[in-house]
Image (cartoon, rainbow, N blue to C red):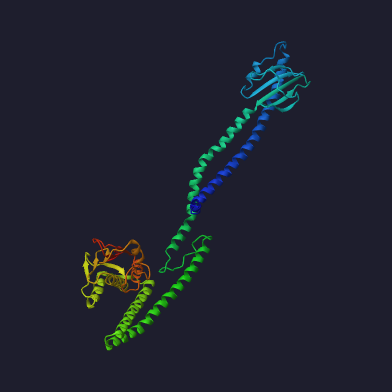
Amino acid sequence: MSEAKTASRASITRRLITALTGTVVIFWLIAVGIGVYVVNKELSETFDGALQETAERLLPLVLDDLANRDHSGDPQSLEALNKGLNREYLTYQVLDGNGKVILHSHDAPPTAYEVPLAIGFHNTSRYRIYTESSADGTIFLHVADAFKNRREALRESGVALLWPLLALIPASIIAIGIIVGRSLRPIDRLRSEIATKDGGNMAPLESETLPLELQPIARSVNLLLERLRLALEAEREFTANSAHELRTPIAGALAQTQRLIAELPQGQLAERAGRIETSLSNLGRLAEKLLQLSRAQAGIGTGDKPADLTAVIETVIGDYDRDTGTAGRVLLENETSGKLLRNVDIDAFAIVIRNLIENALIHGPADEEVTVRVDDRTVQVVNGGAVLSAHELAGLKKRFWRGKTKAAGSGLGLSIVERIVGQIGGHLDLLSPATGRADGFEARITLPLKTTD
């Protein structure tokens, strides 16, 4: 099963290189086979022609020699004729009308070849023989060519054709790899462009510059992006409108409930009205968070001009100091070398800091301060409390995830923070225990590098 999964994830580039190289090698082998077959036919014709021509030229010399010498001795070689023949390749026998060998070359056997005494080509298990005869039919000449000589010539020709294959295989792999890599670059670019698409980037893909095969894919992705954009816009509009419309009636109901509590005497009715007040307050905070989430999804993080983020942090902390319930609980440690300037929307960054401080105040011990530490690259919001597990930390950025706590909250604050921080090019890290402590919780924002003063 695992091997099948591995095969399914194999690189398309590797598959193409392997398939194309294998195909080229197979075609080359087929071409070599055809070439060897053709060479064998041509060599056979060439050797046969040489064999016949040798026999035709040799026979007059043999007849002339026989006419001028004594034939009473045993068959023997003719030194003059041997000098004109290559002993390694061609041998000959001279026979009378009865098939008796009267002359033969040095390498020829003393007994006659087992072929008929007839003009033409004949084969034995070892030789290809051409037979020629005198005009009166009394003298026959066998000129033989060993098959091993032909096989050796054919083998050398085949090896000569196969040698380039050894250099062809690695060269083909390199060449095909380069060609395939260049051909697949548009696919990589398309994949990279698609990977950049999210709720904050729904711009259509540029399809006109893509190859014809990829243009339908780009158009399909653009149609999907358009449908997603419309769906997200409808969702954001519904969320923003709903939250905005709920704020006024919630505020009115909360005011009436608070007035009712002030007029009621102590007792069960007052306690019940107090619980209603708490529920309405939570509902009001949820409506406010939904509005912030809608703005965050709309991409409000970046700003056109550099803003001093330290001043934004001081303003937010000042709001908490003016509240009697949180006065003096938020401490600022400014370790910057000057102004903390970044191209960030002031309102968006204020939402980020307010959510982090609110989260620390709600979930940290009521008798401990919340520390906001700022340097040239990071903003850290630290509060006390029990150490959280890695699983709990991983879930805190999810929407409506509140972890193991009974404190009031919507579970949207850190999700909103991460969204806006990502838009400005920063990163949100959640740590527990806090840096330099054995307990507590730390939310750390790593800001993008400074681009302008």
